[in-house]
Length: 154
Image (cartoon, rainbow, N blue to C red):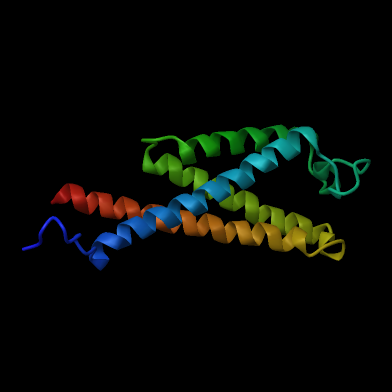
């Protein structure tokens, strides 16, 4: 029996969900910030390379049609809503994760194909890092969803 003067010691099983929540929300918030930044960049500062304000559009540089920028921007906005809004069905959220994964993997392929690694390897490394962040967010989101299902079953 514990007295009120003695705080309850947190068991590892109680600490784990808290740790999972922290990892999930940090990775998800960073991912959301990156996607929001890319939306702003596509809309207001679309030139390549980023340090040359007189360069061509990044989409033109990669050989993509101009309308694709609008489609990608809208898809990212919808993905952010699906990722951050409460009570979004898991399948819709998983579609957002898939869309972001496809976007980041395509960025690696497009920048590699365009030879941008010669300008700076960051054009290839950056989307790979964010793809890892996306995977972390998804894995911990799934873990939390599984814990919630177990809690409801009890």
